[in-house]
Length: 292
Ligand SMILES: Cc1cc2nc3c(=O)[nH]c(=O)nc-3n(C[C@H](O)[C@H](O)[C@H](O)COP(=O)(O)O)c2cc1C
Image 1 (cartoon, helix red, strand yellow):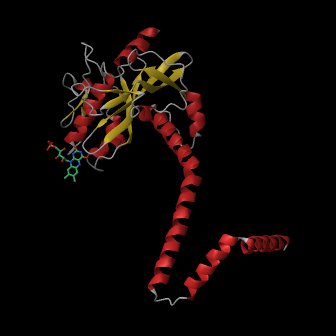
Image 2: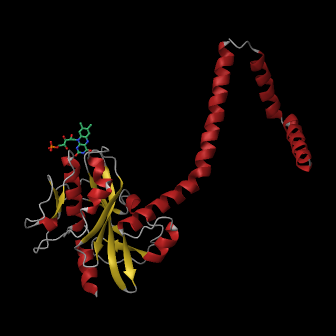
Image 3: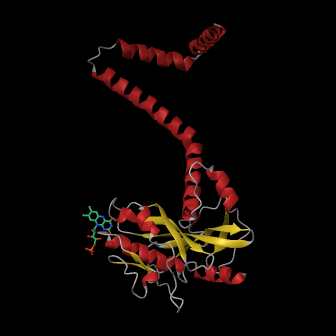
């Protein structure tokens, strides 16, 4: 009952204010005129339709603004989940933020020197945005752009799984064009910087069942233990057409191609070649694997 009284008082106050508002009086006059028209009149139909559009537009705008922080939070959590997943550290039911904070260390890397960058905030740095910002990116010459990405960020965000001071895994962001889309993912390497632990594409728009099989856990499992570099130091790891014959020499550098998706498969091979090569993380990997 006291709540009902409060509501009534509130409504009375709002009505009083509206009654005293000159603009509302004008609006009320037009509203009454419109409502008095016949339901079949063109003016009334248009006025009602416009009012409905106006109210809906306000509702959509308010929802978009109100939900923005939630969307940002969900996006950040999803990214952490992907990183934990590729590191093999994703436990069902675990608190993602806590698990990420406990197990993963994010680092910024200068792509040219392979050195860590300490004077930027690693938490807020967004490599994907930086890759599109002329002040923060490098235009890739066409002859070197095997992943078809046109530009890359000068500074990359990598993730380390550590056991005390020892690195257990190195997680590298990779991306490249498939058939229909740029595929964004993470590649986890063992501490030696050349043995694959896992791969995970978290953003791609290839055809489900064909190129979209890049997210299939069975196909992803084929990557574990594969070797990236040949003796010469060149990136040798690639997808082949068909199934890898594990009895043949070189099988450690090969992963099964995706059936019916040769172009996506070529895209994956190309992005691996680019990001693990001298234009990508090769300089950084050489530095951290010889550092200790
Ligand atoms: C509807 C449709 C969707 C396709 N989606 C993909 C895809 O996501 N990735 C891909 O590599 N090929 C896709 N393909 C197949 C390619 O068009 C192409 O045939 C194939 O990649 C080339 O393989 P091949 O050289 O072994 O014939 C699709 C084909 C069709 C008809």
